[in-house]
Length: 398
Image (tube, rainbow, N blue to C red; front, side, top):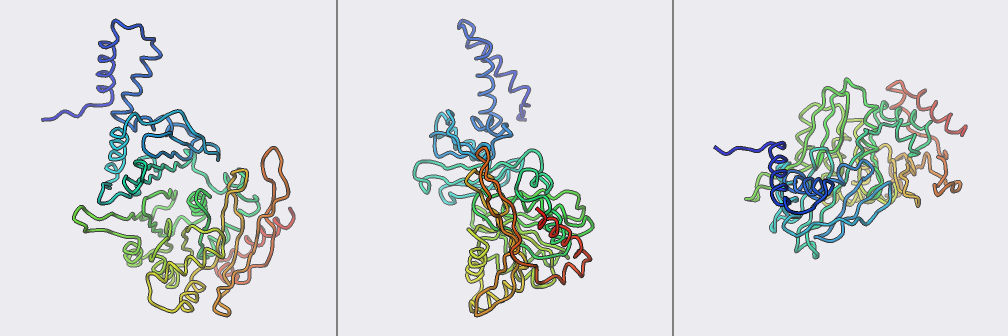
């Protein structure tokens, strides 16, 4: 029977090997500990990536082949002095990562999304698709879960807006969180979900589970599955949305829509699942709706006019996030969808971020009210119109 070595046994074995190999060499205790740590990380952890994954200030790790490892720290990308010793060690780490979450990556399927045990999101692209060797990107999430209070303290939005966001969630508005790569969409969606009443039944649907919804007991978390080696048994976002509708959800939270699954999400929002939320990549709120229409078009053979009506009937609010010149993440606009006119979706900007200057390299600014919320019936139905008005009134006083 094979014996699975525990971490302590591995460390003890490494110590004995180091003592045997360095008995006649003058190697300092510091260097021996460094060798011990590197050997253990290569065997049981993620090799040279381990130290970066243990640094709470690092939010992203990026590398291609055995070249320089880049990290994002405090919003800035930095070239480190670390790299993988050879391609075999890198590929071994990649296979360890994908195997731990029951995924696979090889020449036949060279692209995969996975996650680490701590919830970090991993994307892998193997050669020869990645021309200079395997490309590995790890998106880390804060050790401290960021709620709306924490995001307000960080300057993601003006503090009075917490009341507005809370009212929109309690009012069961269907919301899309849009923004570019690294703008904080998932973090914001996770924080926003903290306002969901704890007695509701929530179903989350994701490619790789990242959302950390706390306090909701009636929570179902669903995750997609890649094809088997025989090309079978794949479970997509579309499959999960369809099956979720038979699970009696109060709300659906789709981690990200980026393909034909958008049409299933819209149909869910249009069939009584108010208060549902999702994220998508876009450069603006207007671009978000155009991209959404294109996604739906790939999954449904119907006229664009009908698609736009479906979008306008499903989405109530678009919250657009972005990264400013100083690398800070901010809510840039909140917009309301007001139907279709002349075959175009009408989007009304409710609040918009306006920069007022710079101080110590940081961009200063505030949210400015542009228009009133037209459709308040959901707020009225849920009894939270006064909550919205309280946040709105305080915002105008800034």
